[in-house]
Length: 471
Image (cartoon, rainbow, N blue to C red; front, side, top):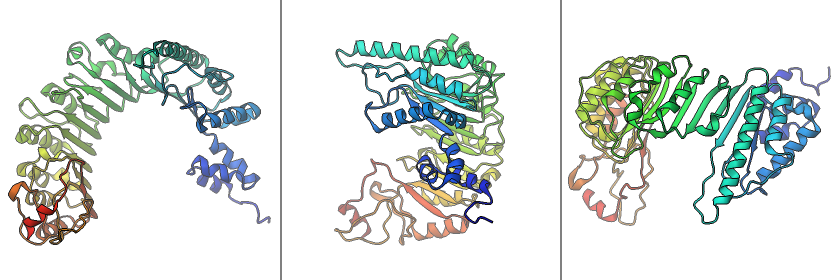
């Protein structure tokens, strides 16, 4: 038996599958057997840039080298499973720099010869913009060039046989130039300016992920029904920036809904649309505040796994507890990770955690924000209902392990440090965590591994004058 050969080459493939390109490049130079196995993984995913940042950069040089390899060794193209092109990534406004052959011709050659390509991604397909004086002509030239590139690549996709999953990111006016939309599985887009444009989304029959970056005017949804538009699409992930919406795709499992507009509030109509989704596993909701008061209604998804609620101002905390938090906790059976704005919390809100059976499965609890509108006494009570908690993230409280001298260095990014003495809230100081709290937390959460304190840039640092409070 030749001991120099590997008896189980499939083990090499298992290892190579987890290596990055840098390590793979070194592995294929070990011997011929490593080369034969590793070369397939080195070219499994290829990225090309239409306008590499600073065209004389390392990225442009490497891209030309890869193209030369494809020309000399076309068999390498059979190893490609995923092809990604970046159109206007990190590009300054200037006339496009052309390659030989042209970029779209390179992409066409790879698509036609790479018969095993099953995933094709187009990122950063936006129109260029520039405010500099004298740059208008360059912007127009670059935009015209991008349009020709998109048309050429999309026409090639139309001609190719076989199914491949396509991901598109860019302005909808450019992305919609692809006539056959049945292979698009992920779409991230901007530029929707009229209700009729939303109706075009129903042609994406295989769409699984959708990101709509622009804020959507509430008046548009008087005539647009998202549930009907996506009734035949297996949409699983949706990110939408909206104030008021009547319906959402019923198949959505991961939802990010919020409003980037100043003064926009969470409305009853919007929350009803969210609550009707029966397959939600992850929910992120971020608005200014809860403006309306409504009779609580059922949250219909029992499978919620991750919950993230962020509101810019507290409003009525009882509204948040009764209308939002309690219906979610009542319905959820496997809630594991929760992120909440602390300024939404009160003693009664935290009490909801200890009174709900669904919180027994929570392993991670994040309270994030510069606001600290809760006491550690309230927190201790709520943690009594979280026996499986493993990670706790809190806003930064003022913590002193001892009475430091005036020249002592204070470390603000600290782990849990017990503090003896009586908690103090005088002189507008944050609530102090003391040893009694720590004992109660340890007793309530036997699996708790770590407490981290979230520190924001605008948190006031402890100064020498603050030390007088503890002396």
